[in-house]
Length: 148
Image (cartoon, rainbow, N blue to C red; front, top):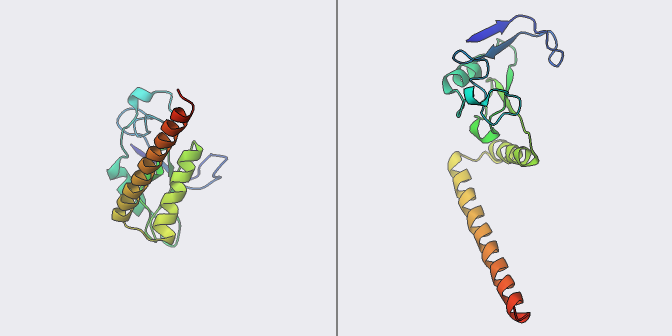
């Protein structure tokens, strides 16, 4: 269900036109299962509703702006093109905020395609594994020095 409200009663947004979506027969069925605001986790979604998201991205009034927010992780959400609805990710932890910042910097300032993100992830995994090997070697050397 997609409901349109001409003038929102929400104090946060003020009296603007809004839409909201409740999938299936439950108001939380388009929310992620991990959302702390969802009291009914069993009725929540595992993935972003792609059909709804595609429609919302194109739902921008002539000469206007549109934005929405999601409680799905920032990396699951598309980066809007000019003239599309801006999608804000809700960041519940510092790790979420840093991940969202990395996606923002990579897609806007660096204009990285998805393939580059994959390459960066592989490089980061190799670096972390290398650090783990160095820590393990140092631990073993320290243990040998102490005679344990």
